[in-house]
Image 1 (spheres, rainbow, N blue to C red):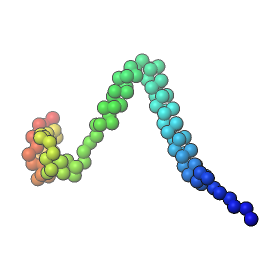
Image 2 (cartoon, one colour; image 1 turned 120 degrees about the vertical axis):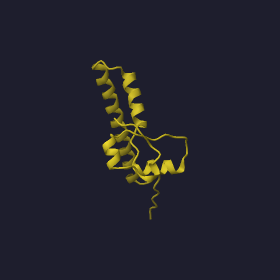
Image 3 (tube, helix red, strand yellow; image 1 turned 90 degrees about the vertical axis):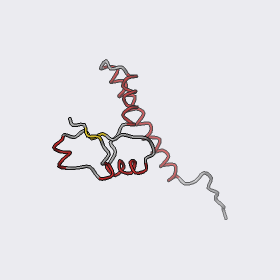
Image 4 (tube, helix red, strand yellow; image 1 turned 135 degrees about the vertical axis):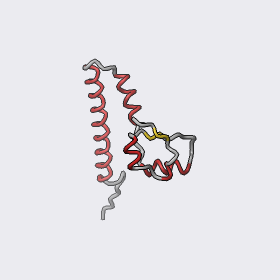
Length: 105
């Protein structure tokens, strides 16, 4: 009777690792292609990369997130409402955001 020892795990796990590596490689190739295209169009690649870095941190907060940040008050803050006067009057802010300063457009 033969005894078989399996060393190294199943091939299913290896498929997932291979698929993940292929996706990571594809993302790197697409990023490199975009940088190359930006260079050919006369854009400064370092400026484009810097704008991408800034874009990662810029996002819109949901109303719920804004209210929770105001309630917990982790940092000194100032809320600014930049809607026009008519919209601000017809749709007032939530009571938690009542301290917002209205600066019409």
